[in-house]
Image 1: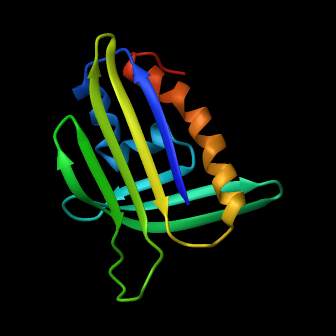
Image 2 (image 1 turned 135 degrees about the vertical axis):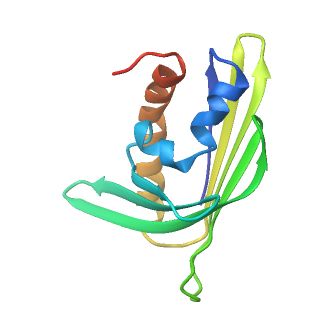
Length: 143
């Protein structure tokens, strides 16, 4: 599964990048991320939680920042420490300047098959809802 999303924000690239470069800040604007705690330098233990009608599912991942170009590009990849094979998760966020502020392009790749189209629909819905929360944060407005 590959999901792409974008956002234009009325702020400098460095300000927007600060919200996507640190997974610990994601729970403030992306409600599917219920917790993201540091786990060493450039790594986080992330808990994802979603509801599918009456069912709730959660997933814990250890994500490491594998690439960073300050104020421009960050890539996080699943990197578990248990020695077992796990489906890949890769999150890429790229921020570019625009005359009116900055532009964010995000791509999520999930290489597993668990929940299939249900997971994709949940994530797409969450992306739509999160745009307003992230814009409010970078604009200095809170909800």
